[in-house]
Amino acid sequence: MSISSALNTVQSIFNTTGYQSSVVSTNIANSGNSDYVRREASVTSTLAGAQIVKISRAQEDALLKQYLQSSSQDSAQQTLLSGLGDLQSILGGNDYETSPSTYLSAFQTALQTFAASPSDTTAGQSAVTAAQDLANSLNTASDAVQSVREDADAAIATQVGTLNTLLSQFQTANNAVKLATATGADTSAALDDREKILKQISSIVGISTSTRSNNDMVISTADGTTLFETVPRTVSFKATGTYVAGTEGNSVYIDGVALSPGEGSTTTAKGSLQALLQVRDEVAPTFQSQLDEIAKGLVQSFSETGSGSTQPGLFTWTTASGADGGTPSDTSGVIDGIAATITVNPAVIAGSGGDPMKLRDGSISGVTNLNPDGNSGFADNLNTLYSSLSVTRSFSADAGIGQTGSLVDYAGSSIGWLEQYRSDASTMSENTSAALSRSEQAYSNETGVNLDEELTKLLDIEQSYKAGTKILNTIEEMLQSLLDIAGTP
Image 1 (cartoon, helix red, strand yellow):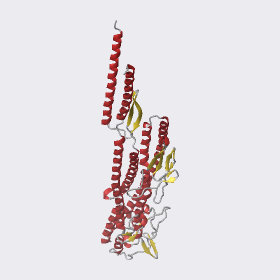
Image 2 (cartoon, one colour):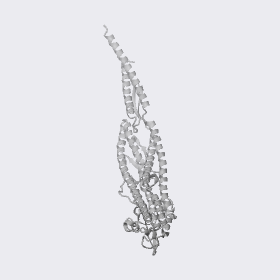
Image 3 (tube, rainbow, N blue to C red):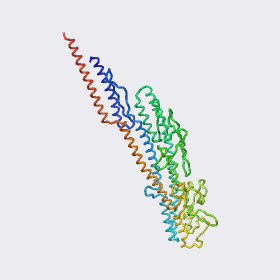
Image 4 (cartoon, rainbow, N blue to C red):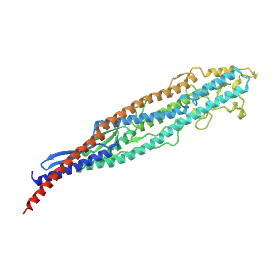
């Protein structure tokens, strides 16, 4: 080997090891970055020596696809569970101390006590107070349910804004990938940026991707609607500021196609947007319907009949326009918002000039008086009212639980429905969380940085560098010997 050939070899070694050490150092610096995909400098040998051919990126499309799917499913399930937790808090947590069912049981007990001592004014006032507590619990629960819907609607608006921003950022990243591919430049950093944005998008809406020439990527939603193709497609939503029972929220439109809400406790939603729509449009309204059915049952059970007419008795309510709601019929179905306006008739509230004893005598509405003689021991009406809470009656199928049963049992079934829904969602959330963790780990194992491996590579590069140094030292010694020979007289 000539000296010039040896020098070329040394130069090749130094160039190659310098490039390799740069790549490895970058890997090590990003060992804690979950959005960084490992790089590797591919080396080949030529007559001129070793040289870097290209920078390889540890890309795993199949594992990335699985990760994006798991991310969408877990995001949806966790969002649904959060919404169900908000609804559970309306009932006072695990003991349900603020639930209508709890107050209904307390009211039934107060009625029984009053029936046992019908002449006791204090017992009568206690029964009326228990009725007020029951009505207030329905009012509060109804307002809270609508607040959950308002929060979900606001979250939808926020996420739509975020999604549009991410799609705009994706366009920039996608263009950078296409340009680097077309010019033969290293695409690794641009691909990392694009992939990072994909992960964020997948948590909002379920997606699938396809790659065209020049690494150009197209994004579609899980149902096949185009989300991005060269440019972002429009994602639109008009928020609704205030919700009352019966209010229908606006849809989210992607490229003109309405995004459907998820279904079921093990939700079919992909991404948080569909789960938020499910909470706003499916779960919360169903729970609201159950509250409305309880309120409707109370108005009916405590109505008074006389002179050919039926009028609300202990419980009254008002329509959306503020008019007296009257006594609902059995065939009226769910009356949206009755739980929000149900109240105790002022005619029995002592502090409002009323008389609690009208509850005993059945004369609250003024259409009848079951105790015209004013018998202080009259308890027939109180016993009838007490029993009415346990009498089998019909309920609307639109409320999502049993269509027949007593009012007390129905109120308990409402709690059971919500708890079963939440329990199933909680179990599924553990599964989706575990699936996401496994997908993330599998993807990280293939594309992430292993510090031990990178440090080992760094040691190998160091050995190559030392070999080049030794060759250079040998060349130096040879040149010095030649100079010494040439300088000898």
